[in-house]
Length: 147
Image 1: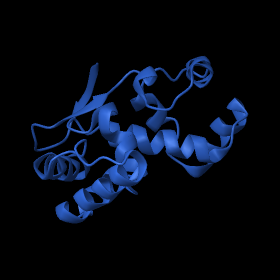
Image 2: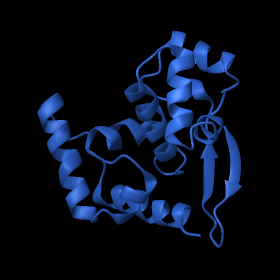
Image 3: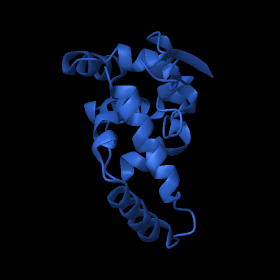
């Protein structure tokens, strides 16, 4: 795991994970991204800063733009240290698509969304992250996005 940079005025370090750690990325897609010079989530984010850049990557990979948007959203969330690649997919499926959105979420509301998701998809609530963990995600997201 690489550390890309420290968010200004904080001790929170933004993470730059190898692309193969991004959830839901097939081996074929991983290879295609690597052929385009994308080996880390930081590179994916940098190379898809604009809608035109996302469209270009989707065209190069011959996939739909929704897949690229999903990868970029998860990559952005994964850069938050307490979220990482372990929870970025969970947050995306719970309706959180960016660090900015995460930073603005009320803790209890997000925790309830995740709890409902776990119960609906796995018929379990014991796997739901604690309120304290969810609060840490939100606090670190605020630090990461602050100027």
